[in-house]
Length: 78
Image (cartoon, one colour):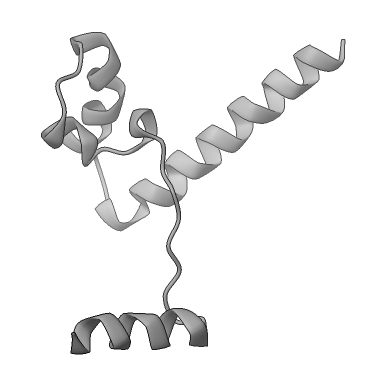
């Protein structure tokens, strides 16, 4: 029960933030769910074939997602 209160206090203080991540963007889901190869490959590929500092993976994926969303928004405006 102590761990619950510890987490609750840290969330209230702004030290911890919980966020929902859709399954198709969450690499952890590849280990816990049955996925088709085509759906899983984009999530696994950066992990298997990463060259460089692995601490940048999340930031680079976020930037790539933002670029893709921006492109989709521009296309929908036309």
